[in-house]
Image 1: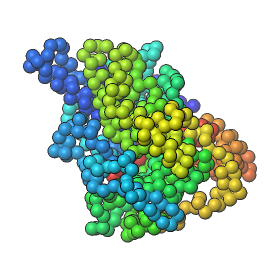
Image 2: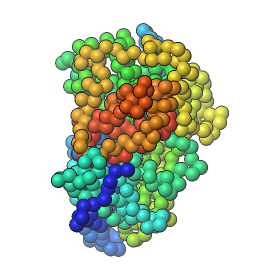
Image 3: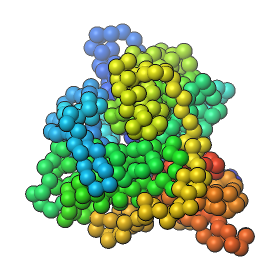
Image 4: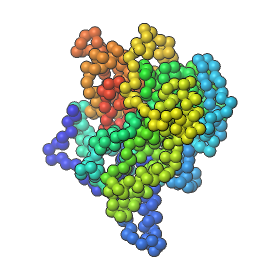
Amino acid sequence: MINDSLPEGVTREIMDVDVLIVGGGSAGLSCALHLSNQIKKHNEDITSGKTSGTSIQDPMIVVLEKGSEVGSHSLSGAVLNPKALAELVPDFKEKGCPIDSEVSEDAVYYLTDKSSFKMPITPPPFHNKGNYIVSISKVNRWLASQCEANGVNIFPGFAAVEALYEGQKIIGVRTGDKGRDKNGFPKPNFEPGLILKSKITIFAEGTRGSLFKQVQARLNLREGKNPETYEEGVKEIIQMPAGTVKAGQVIHTVGFPLKKSIGGTFIYTIPGDKIILGLVAYLDSKDPLLDPHRELQKLKTHPFISNMIKGGKVIAYGGKTLPAGGWYSMPKLYGDSWMVCGDSASMVDVQKLKGIHLAMKSGMTAAEVAIEGLKTSDTSESQMKLYEDKVHASYIKKELYRVRNFHQTLSLGLLKSLPLIALQEITGGRGLQDKMKSHVDADTTKKLQEVWGLEGQQAPENQLPKPDGVLFFDKLSSVYLTGTVHDENSPNHLILKNDDICRSVCEPEYKSPCNLFCPAQVYEMVPSQIEPGKKDLQINYTNCIHCKTCDIKCPFENIDWTVPEGGGGPQYHET
């Protein structure tokens, strides 16, 4: 365990806030902006005599963001359905929201090993006209600027590490210390974390929120729910020669390169002659050698893609996970003085690969409940339940309920699932069986020989195309493009529970899946210093790009992803 005791004479500063939002992504920032707008209108209505009551003076709204700045950890495709944004900021275009391009064309292709076939009719879930291609890191920076103009306090570089309780009531959080060495001892630049006591706490950490993971375990918030399942996405931005790219195209493909796993790819074109190329793979795959980064490199060898990107150069890279369990995997959304929204609450339409507008809407919905709690000084569980009621009455439920069995069905295999998915479309999402069960992703991984036989890692499908530093990259070179930075003399935030499992079972029988599914080469097996002839797991935690796949997919659930020192991690700008 890392030492977290304070030096003699050092204490933690205590700050009282009205509403504390953990996470500076689309959900958290939309919550903060909507809440500040509502408070402003409430106070104006009282001043003008339009309504009676007490104004909310000097509201203290705080957003904690673990990245060095808002947007630095934001990664998504991203095609944005603008309806939540238009509700939040009706004049978002006039206010300079960074929209790359409106979608003008969409198409779906099936890729064989060497050929491509365009579907004559684009399936309805892939209709994107009227949506926008955006950089979510840029959009979130813009949302932050709107929040700060409204007086919202945003604290970048502050990672929330512990929820504070009074019984079952959440009364705030503690942020992580800064300036500890590898063993947890204070360095000369040591700064203790803060204690933030809040009337209402809103969790908006994104996928597999590390703090909310603790909260849901303590409060048993997934009782009776399906296990959450996830997908892993990797993405590159390719700079093409001037005048070669028509902006506004959205293309999805299925088939090549994925052979033993389910997933698909996306191709978006944006101004400046840039192509966004990404691949998403289901993490309930049986394949212990699943490697989305490798599959993305292989994708670029396909004639359909290679002709499209010829003459280009990769200028950005990133990876993340997204929740895929859907409606039946959503945790309890509220409790005494708290709510949870966005990806932390499993609010992603995995059929359409859309979650940004749902995250924004959930944050706005939480804000509407929060202001009522502030006005009445009632933040009890019964008051917070209004949030769940409002979510159920909104298009969040309408969209998620319609695809409530989609991921579980597609996990059966592309060909087997197609008629079942068609039936779900006809029956409003029910299909042959409602509340299809999902599985913990870690439990689905099979041993190497069960999946690959004697070929194993030598199979042609498992070979990485030769890197050239232009269009094809090994993982370390790709990580460089993320700008990832961690203090090398700080505690390792990736907690290995039992290294003997890695050496004695996982490497011999599974060939160490973490070495492959990690999109940043954080994990590698090296000659053992304990048992000659075997291998030990080495964790290169400074490479971590915070996708959290290791926390999800290790077949022994042997890795616990915790937040590093605030400010560490990727430095996304184009994503």
